[in-house]
Image (cartoon, rainbow, N blue to C red):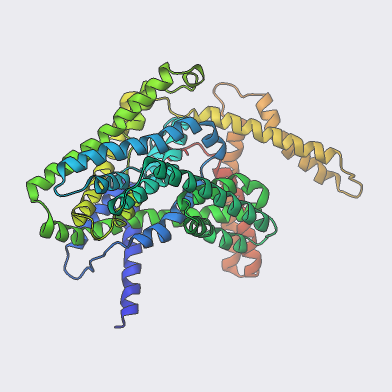
Length: 530
């Protein structure tokens, strides 16, 4: 059998295992990332399963940009701007603090490692994983402001960590100064933001002219690379460029895209994000055998390895806890404008235990130069850090329950949504009243007026205590009718009474309405609320 066919078989098997394990773990309530790592680790020791060696450029240039972009376009730019102080304290301050603490700890316990190499390792394990943090935060129903901070931190701290890593690698072969590090950081930020805004602005102008969802989505799929690669070439932060472009385009999407294009883009990016984020964890497990062989050949021994791993994990956790104590103290006892931000000790504790590592750590550790002392051992420690923080994340539900953080007020949010929808429909009704309606059937106009007034009148006349709201009754009954309508169309198709084009178009209309109804359906317990 040709090598290309074998490669395709392995890729298909890889995707099938990823989907199957993720679906099964979601059904039984386990952590998908942890399960995929375990499945990959077990499979890596089975004879016949190919040993994988992680290529850093494949992850940094191939997987990281679309993962960051998928998270960025779903993140609210307005919320990030409102919580920018907390996000900067974590994405810049905490990363720098972690690099120093973990770097010194690694320098003290890892044999024959230079201080520069130790700081490089600290930069490798400093950034949290955007995908894992978003998944955990959404599942737990944390306060919206806290979710925004965690998502913003995990999106932006990659840039800080990679700048620190580059500086530490440079320090291995030459002399650098704090001024050089600061200059590199400023250049990375300025160039990254400029490229991200530039790419976002240009693409928004182009996509505004596109009316075919296929063309719009195709352009969306290459956007992460259009931002990442130029930023890297100009010595900026490609990570920051992708995030900025994603936030900009996500904020502008209601203006530059058709409704059909927005729905298509959302579904496509959710699919890509699911496949890539879970595939990375399976890939990490499959690479364990190769990493383990290197540790056995050149590592310091089993007991010493266990001790060093424990010290590194402890230093990583303690650095985050200490920084959150400092940050929370500043919010509680600092300037008046910070004290009004509502950052409590319980919030600080929750953030302390949300430091899950993932894709960037796995990719960054392979950027260490070949001549780095104990390079294979450092790769193994990065694996331990990712696995250890994933396990730590399993304790988050218990921690959140003990902290008794206020969950999002779903009823309040639904009420705000309904009031805003009523306001929007009133604007549409006002426009209708201004139109020349000569030649329009009165029944058509009356139907439009009735639909526009329905929600506003329902809000003005709340139901009795033992009755569900009028919008809830409408949604429930209309959803039942939609199911009957779809079945009628399918029956007509099976009888061959209509052409397939008419059937597909009618089903598309029904699906669009059902999708709109589902947006107002009350969430189930444990359902992602973000």
